[in-house]
Length: 115
Length: 111
Image (cartoon, rainbow over all chains, first blue to last red; front, side, top):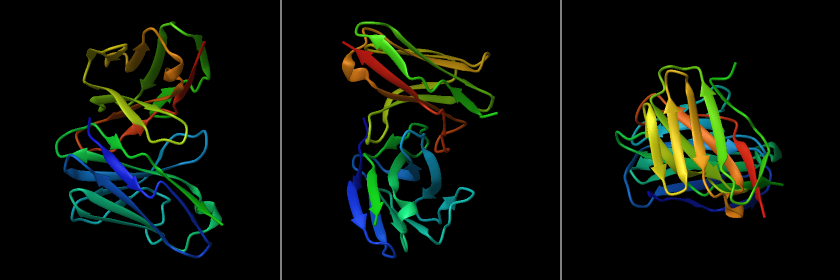
């Protein structure tokens, strides 16, 4: 199956700093990538959809200036959490889709803790 | 009413049992149906993918889609303790579209 990686797997940062999370498709070209966050014992919540070379589309209620998404190439998308606060602490997961296909392949997730 | 309904469980079964997991949905535009398995603190893993109605089998797993009833199922045969995880159904209307997820069913397979 297709492989998606995320880096880092776990990050701790101080309140007010910014954190960048990378999502890479390792063996296919991801024309579309999605970013989710997940709180304990809850399902995935879609934050935004990004298509290579264009601006991300954010879901209602997600602050685009706080969660910056860049899909610069067909294998890499980044999520930057700016001016992080403790309430941003969560599990962030990306997924990727190859052009014309419906199956989404997920990365292993990044656990963010803001102190 | 949610677009996709899934019993959250928890569901506890003995090792070797047949497990049946189900989701119902309301949006008739959904054409692509997926089942994911998620272990604690890990990303979801794609188990089964089905387009439109029908059955699909892969090893111990069988996925069924009944679009007329808007009902999908995942069967796990000869369940193992390693199958203990949360199972998420997901569906979309087209390639590259965002997925709509069920809430997930927590499964525990006991020795």
